[in-house]
Amino acid sequence: MESKSRLRNSDEFVENSYMTLSLDEIIKKYQREKIHPAFIFSRFQNLEIHFRELQRRRRTKEAIYKNLSSKLQELEGGHSNILGEISNYLSKLKRLKGSRDEKQKIREKLKGLRKSEDSLVHEMGGLSLKVDYINGQKERTLNEIKIFEKNYKNEMQYVYSNGLVDEAFAWSRLIKPGKSRIAEPLLIAQNSIIPIDKLFNCEYIDAVDRKILMEAKYPDKDEHLVSSEILEKRLEDLPERIKNLAKLIKNAEEFKKIGYKCDENKLYSRLQDLLYERDVLGEHVVSFKNKILLN
Image (cartoon, rainbow, N blue to C red; front, side, top):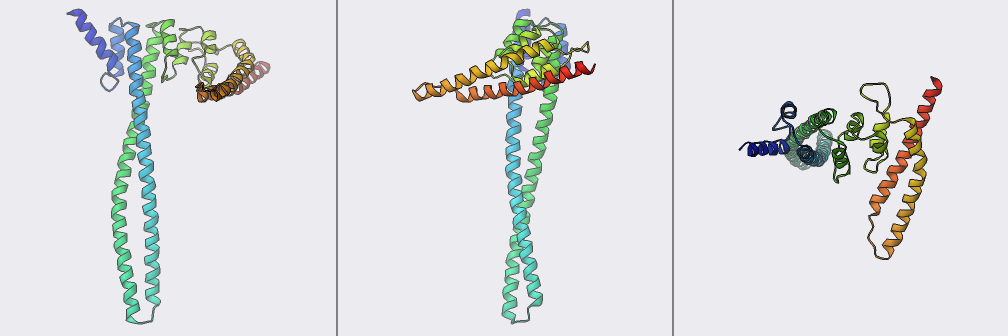
């Protein structure tokens, strides 16, 4: 019975997001129970599924908001045009000294324009309410995302800083496909889960991750996580990496001509990442050396 209860509690721990269990409750669970890293890994995966759903919902709300706002602007433009026409006809009516028939025609025209204006005002009012409603939903989703990111980062910080997982866990997190990491490589580095030279040079992080790592310092001392030696060595190796990847892209184009399938988009994306990394690393190394000279 006890093992079944423990399993049921583990399932609840893995499957529930912060909407069901607060971060404080999750931390207390970590403190009370020895949770196997496999359950933590599964929990992180489920949290990322929830995070991607929040992002999908945000994109959907933003698209709807943009579409409705565009329609509202079109209606407002049409309304301004009608008001302009009404103003012109009223001026014309005041100046007109002709027959009663001519004045009657203008009055009929004004009547039709005012009817169209009333219809537009009604439509604009309804659409404006929809725009406000969707905007409110969009803002709430953005707020949910901010709260989720904060909670998730704090939970990961607790897990990594308290030694609840090891290097194998961290590598498994880095290499898994479809990852939605939130500052995780930095937490892994700051808590010395993976040696910094291995982490910084691995192929499972991108240029943005490396930029964060090389700008960060240890939590307990005024010292950068990534040494100048590691940076310079990486910078020295990049030209050869870029050259080899460019060659691979060229070969992929040739293979494609004879019927082999190659994901050129991924290769080009990787090349752009390396080029960005080269620029960022170069600037950082120069800045680092200048600081040493000034000191």
